[in-house]
Image (cartoon, rainbow, N blue to C red):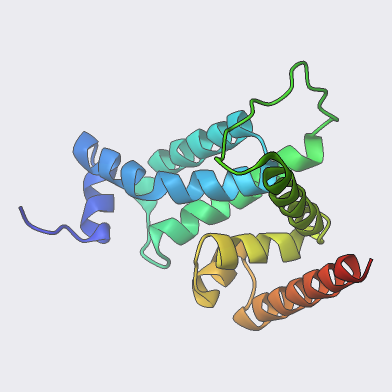
Length: 180
């Protein structure tokens, strides 16, 4: 079995090759879904964004120009779709409590760990949107600065500034929490 370059795979997918389309989806869907989920905090909406991202990909593949990596382009589309959803979002009321997962920890340890995770998650969610996006792409998705900057449509210097401000703000807020 030979290794097919992504450019060849995109060309095959554009020509209607279902195997190439499936390979692109299998390779890039997890990252697109995680980015959408981290931004939206809703599994169903993240799935919708992921599906819409790939629907747009299939429509634009015949005109694909190899200026950026497919993953970078897909994350850019997903981020923009998430921004649109967040603008339209109304408050969500829950009908049921979320399911409890057994972590194997003692109840007090599990509670402490959960509370710490919730505090950090809340601090990240409170960051300005652009800082949160930069942090999500680089820290959680492991993108390099160049790829993350391309996904966000900004310069590498602007991305590094966003990351620096986000990390500084998180560090300061965590220090305040520890002092309290």
